[in-house]
Length: 414
Ligand SMILES: Nc1ncnc2c1ncn2[C@@H]1O[C@H](COP(=O)(O)OP(=O)(O)OP(=O)(O)O)[C@@H](O)[C@H]1O
Ligand SMILES: [Mg+2]
Image (cartoon, rainbow, N blue to C red; front, top):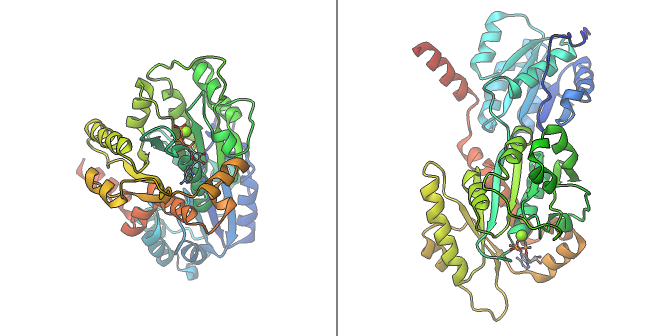
């Protein structure tokens, strides 16, 4: 196997926190990719290697979401590479990139791969450094989009459970989708993320926000504390040593940096109304408003939806969920009434379960860790699929071919 080290003039940028899944046919290729996984530029990536080639990939993603990169090896035409790619195209989530390692040197076949939306065809035997460069180029080439999607979670009123929802949602995305996820606790003075994950990191979001001139990807890496597989936390110091008077763009640099490095960023936004919190909400890819079934929440959600719609005319409406429904003896606005008054469907209705939520909070655990089959745990699974775009994409069966066809048509036209 050729393994030319990186030439001095060849700079390969580190890849962001993506997931790469490889399906090999030759043991040598599998071994090469296993080796690549520990390369410094793939340090943040999560690499999984298995055998079975294209057929195994098709089987694997029939019912599971696709990762950021799928790597498929075809040793010979008898593995039916084109058929496999066509089947894969039917189940591929938007944004998933496919790289092919092939053993057949044939221009026509190469063209057919590219026509099917394959990002790159690498001839075996592939040098480790060429594979790293190919993956890196997908995410760091000029014009490549940042990988991160931000999800802001905001309470319609204080204590509505927005942090609890944000943390359980992030944990579920990391666990069930295998997507690298970061929770950023923006409640600098009172944040609960570190308590809810039973963590005590020495540094966190305050260092990033109060010393923006020092903020870069190295510092960010040091500030993140790992709290589960694929899940890291940017915790709030939760001290009153200093007051928190932030400028409007206070979180801009941090969020931009996170976007470049992490596929899913859950922003636990405290229930404040300030220039910066308004800006964080308006700038998020997805907004989830957590409301209680009462009049004040209803009024606040109505105002928030109106403002957000006006400020984000080209975006989908913020999602609204009701939390803590069914407190004994408490008069509540029924979910159907709440939705009707807002004229939007509710994303979810989470019951009031004090024993379950209280145990989770006291133990520093997530709901599914306390009781895996509990109704709220199922709701968090559905919510994770919805806010990460999985539910919609699965339904629409995004086609691998579309981006490539669009590119080709544009090229022809120009
Ligand atoms: N569905 C629920 N049933 C019972 N208790 C709940 C539920 N959801 C949240 N809680 C509890 O309510 C309390 C407040 O939750 P949380 O801290 O998430 O609210 P918040 O909206 O983030 O509050 P703040 O406005 O202070 O940021 C916590 O003790 C949490 O365990
Ligand atoms: Mg909170």
